[in-house]
Amino acid sequence: MFKIPPILSADELLDKAFGRAKKIRSRDKKEKTINKISTVKQLLNNTLQKYVKAFPSFDNLHRFYYELIDLLVGVDKLKKSLASLDWARKKISRIAANGIKKAKKEDADYRKIIAEVYGRISSIVYEINPHLTFLEEARQKIKTLPYIDVNAPTVIIAGYPNVGKSSLLKLLSSAKPEIASYPFTTKGLIVGHVVIEEGYEKRKIQMVEAPGLLDRPDEERNEIERQGIIALRYLPDLIVFIIDASMHCGYTMDKQMKLLEELRREFDVDMIVVENKVDISGGKTDFMKISCSTGEGIEELKREIMKRLL
Ligand SMILES: Nc1nc2c(ncn2[C@@H]2O[C@H](COP(=O)(O)OP(=O)(O)O)[C@@H](O)[C@H]2O)c(=O)[nH]1
Ligand SMILES: [Mg+2]
Image 1 (tube, rainbow, N blue to C red):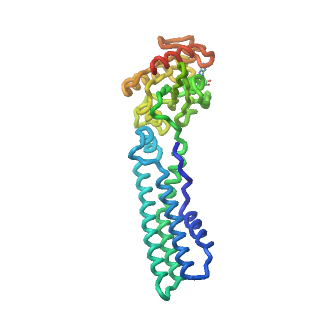
Image 2 (cartoon, rainbow, N blue to C red; image 1 turned 45 degrees about the vertical axis):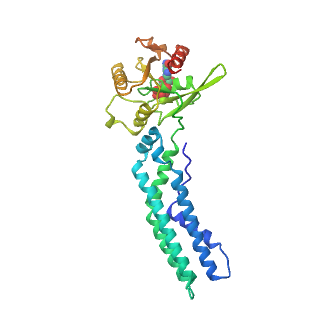
Image 3 (cartoon, rainbow, N blue to C red; image 1 turned 135 degrees about the horizontal axis):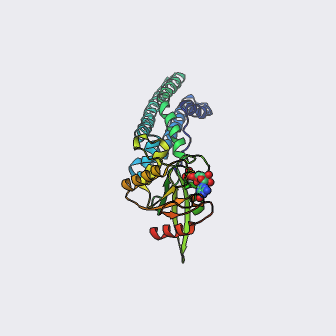
């Protein structure tokens, strides 16, 4: 989704810049000094600018991504770190310009000028090292965010852990989620796509599995659950809420119904409630009955989803 290049550490950046400058050969000492300084300046300048540009600009970022990045990384911290890169860039340019000016003077001590410029530039780059480290960590987290088309019709599959959300996503869409008999297999948001053909027209529907939610206050939710809440808040045109009345998921009906009521209260979005695993429960509720194991009710659910979306 966001293509951010690896962020080098202060040491790596300086090695690269000074290494590049080392290759400069010239018999004229003045020319050599000036070339070295401008090479170091340019490399650092371009690299730092590239980093700043590669991060999403927060002013026109969709609210969904803004909130996700804020949760995973912290938007304020990110802004501060990016600003420090800009600061360093300007400072380095000034140091380089100064050095070049000195080198142009008669009787300039080139060795001393280079040592001074390199020393001052190094201390600026070391000063932003904590920010570089933070930005590299941020990049690693932002990299894992799925691509979501915020304009496509979107269905979110929600429910308690282990009720069969991944199984349903797999049956309905192109996604290949991990399915396991223990809760919280889903570490983040999983996105699948369904293409429907209507005559000559093709429409793409997005299906997103929200990580398993428990019925508990927002403050007690962990980072993974919160990603689900952010998705529910900013993305869906429709929520498919899954209930498991077989007790195989390990949670009582009472708890699951409470979560359902809470989501209904909190999110003003059309919702389909289904009871899954009816192959083992026999069907204990009045909700639409499905089984991801036998396929029972899946076609009906698909039709119902399309009807609500189109
Ligand atoms: N018997 C039965 N098991 C199911 C059904 N749907 C899912 N499961 C099982 O329930 C477990 C949890 O499923 P999963 O899709 O990973 O749930 P999630 O945590 O909500 O994504 C897995 O062992 C699935 O094989 C179903 O309709 N019938
Ligand atoms: Mg899952």
